[in-house]
Structures are given as C-alpha cells and as structure tokens.
Length: 284
Image (cartoon, rainbow, N blue to C red):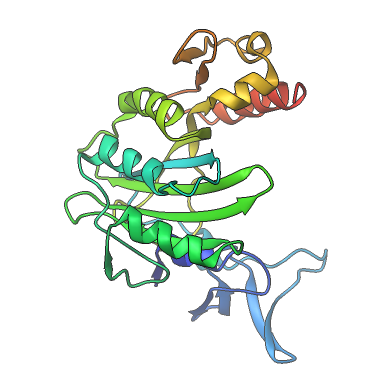
C-alpha cells in the first residue's frame, strides 16, 4: 500500500489516520508507525509502559525498494496583490517548465486528476471560492514523475500560494540542482516569491509514499524573496552567521537572496538552515 503526495497531505493531522493491516501487530499508522487498536469506535495508538506510542516492526524494517532513487522537493510560497487581472498558477508552471521542460499536464480538486492544465480555469475556481482557501493537486506528464499540491489563500496582505512540488529520479538520473538558482531568480522577478526551500531525499522515483519509515529530505538551498529581504534588511540578509556566501538575485538595490546549503547528501545542512532562519527571523 502506498500514498500519493496529495493524499498524504490530506491525511495530515488528527483525527485522520492511514491504517495499515499487519500480520505481526494487527494494525499500524502508515505515517507514524504507531501500533493501533480499535477502541471506543476509533483506532488509537498502543502505548508502551513509559507512555510512548509502540512502533510497528514493519514500519522500521530496512527498505527493499527505491533506496537508490531520489526525489527533488520544492516548497514555494508566493504573495500577490489581489488585482482583478491576477492569474494564479504561474509560479508552479515556471517550476515545472524549468525542471521538466514542459508545463504541468493536469490539475483538479481531488484525485484522480481529470482536468487539463489551465491557469485561467484554476484562477476562476479559486476566485469563486474566495475568501475560503482552495486546495488543488497538479500532475505532470508520464516521462518525468512530478506531482504537486497548491493551496491558494486570501490573507490580510494579498493572495498567497503555497506549493509543494516533488519530482522523481532513478539511480541513473541526476536531479537538476544547477537549475534551482535561475528558477529562484525567475520566481523572484516574475511571480511574487516569498520563499523557496529546495531539498533532496532518498525515496521512490514514482513519488508514492510507502507505509514505511523513510529518510527525511536534506536541504539544498533556500531563497528569500525581494519583499522579505527588504523587511529583514539587506545588510542582515546578506551576512548570515555561516560559512556560505548568498547570491543576490535581481537588481542590486532590491534583490532576492539565494543561500546554497549543500548537495542534498549532508544531514548537517539542517543545522545550517536552522541557524539561517533564526538569524533572519530575529530581524523581522
């Protein structure tokens, strides 16, 4: 049993659970590994004597598939003025084109996806639902595994997009890490970028999630949009307390800032990312 990215996102948070049947323990949660039992009309975690959730052995056993495959993951946030001519979905399409050479294939409000990709129709749907947020799923073409979730919200500061895009690569394929900085520059200049976190992880090329413990993603880079750099201050944003040199993207007087964090293989990159974000937040 495996989940897609949109289904995984939809299951996040209590009381939703991914209940997996197992010969050894009966049932367990496919996302956390917690052994479950049916109690008072619901599945609840089985506790150890010290009060922690018992973890199923099937969840922690070594993986047998996908160990040499990787996923490139982009977490993108954008913000736009609520103009009547605003067309949404442009940032996601820019990511897709930069990393696959083509736009998305389809979109929808639920799986299976059955609508051809259209920024205009997507915008009309979300405008009709406003001020309620819209949650959408987007898929790519069959030659390059790619799938995304897109949440569009009306906030006090404008219209915001939250994108999670995942792309799959086999053991003989190299993720296009050198395309990330030019993409970040495009997002900052043309699509209202607030932030972009790029990471890489060992996981299945087909982008499905097994009911099994997987390695976490490791940071590759972080990009701060023009407005966020202005809020924090150019001097502070450009001098993080780390042994890295950020790149300025765009005009010198109003740049975005791109921070390289690694090649997606070093777990200590999370420490650098945490130090960086604490440095940036302290000035906000």
